[in-house]
Length: 267
Image 1 (spheres, rainbow, N blue to C red):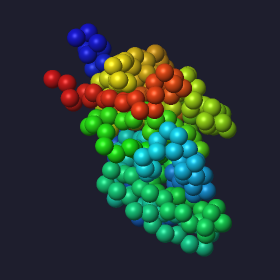
Image 2: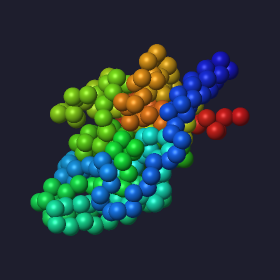
Image 3: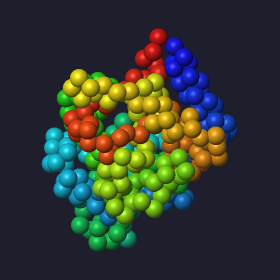
Image 4: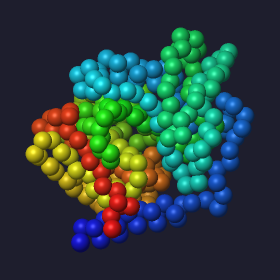
C-alpha cells in the first residue's frame, strides 16, 4: 500500500511539473510541406544506417521482429495527429505515411541517400522526439520482449534518434560505440511505455523481478533538480511512462518478458 501511494505521489509530482510548463496555446501547425520553421528533422542516411544495423543484428537477438519508427511528443501542447512527414532532398520531396499510433516505415531510396536527405515532420524542433519500435508478434498483452528492446537501443542510437542528452539520460557523447553502450549494465537508454506506469517486471521462466523505482520515471525519485533537468530530456512530458532496463545483464535472456502494470489498471 505504501509503495502504491509513493508511486502515485511521484507520478503526480512529475505530471504537475510538466503542467507548469504548459503554454497557453498549442504549438501552431505548419501546413507548408518540408519547410517547418526550425524543424525536428532527422538524417535519412543515419536512419537507413539504423535499418542496416537492424537487418545485420536481428538474427541474433530478435529474429522474428519487425522494425518501425515512432514519433513521440516532447513539449506540452504538441499536436501528434495529422503530422505530415516527408523525406526531403535537394531536388525532391515525398511524403511518408504515418499510422494512427504515430509509427511509420521508411523505404530505402538511393536518390535520398545520394542527396543526403532529411526526414522532416511539420513540427518545430524539440516539440517531438523519435524512437524505434521493434516488436516480435504473439506476445501477451502489456508485455515486450527484452531482446527486442535491446535492439531498439542499438538501432535508436545508430539512427541518431534521441533528440538530445541530459543529466537524466546520462548518455551524452557515448553514441560512437552503440553496441557496447547498449550492452553495458549501467546503460541509461530511456524507453517509453504506452501509458503511465505503476510497475515493470522482468519474467524469465520461474524467475520474476520487479524493477526498482529508480529505474522508472527517468530517475525522478533520485533527482532533486528534476524541474531544471526536464527541458534537456526528450522525456519532458512523458516522465511517467519512462523506464530503464538492465540491457547488459545477460542473466536475463533475450526471451525475457518485460511486463507492464499501468496506473489506470490499478483499483
